[in-house]
Structures are given as C-alpha cells and as structure tokens.
Length: 148
Image (cartoon, rainbow, N blue to C red):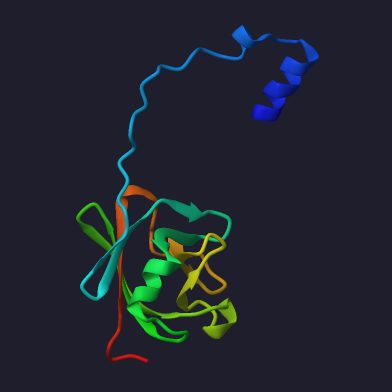
C-alpha cells in the first residue's frame, strides 16, 4: 500500500492532499495483555495464528519462557481459554524441531520471532482444536513436574 501510494505521489498522479484524510492527533490504546510469570506458570495471550500452517503464536518471549528452566523434550501442561471457556487442555513436549515428535503430535517451540508457539506435527493445531487469536484468547504454560 505504501509503495503504491509513494509511486503515485512520485509520478505526479496524486498530490499530498489526495493521499487520504488527516488522522486525528489523539492515539487510542489497544487492550494488550503482557505475558507474566505467576508462580510456576506463564500466562500470556494469542495475538496471531500462523494461518498457513495452523500454528498458534503467543506473546510469550523466549526470555520469559527460559525462566521456567525448560529443556528440549520437557513436557509442558498447556491451557488455552477463549474468555472464560477452556478450549484446550493438554500436554506436549518442548521441541527445537518438528521431527522430534511423532506425526500428528502437538509440540511447543520458539517461532521466528523467538516467541512460544504451538503446533501439530504435520497437522493444523488451530483448526484441530478450534483455536483463534485476539485479546480474548489466553494461554498458560507450566512445566509438567511428573513428565520428562
């Protein structure tokens, strides 16, 4: 959109007044839940899905995730809510590659933004468990003390 508008401005097809309406001086805030460490759990939200693959991306950074002392193959207890409705409750391994878990098994990994994500190896996690994104979607992650 910006390149298109810039090209039109540069070629003289439009002038600055034709770019669009002037925006108001005030800025509005979007409700944003910062991830937090609460006891032995991390609470965060799901701001976006990786639609192409059905992976669930959280706002939980790798630096916060490291505070749980998670190692590859550790089992995590995951809960996902839509407002107050529990939509997913399950255990999954933390993995650095999808190949570390069998096909159609869930896994927790760090995405390209170095945030915690959930996936289904060779499947679509979001569709399989009817997970969506937005401020009403929250997640908790806890290391399973009984599992590896």
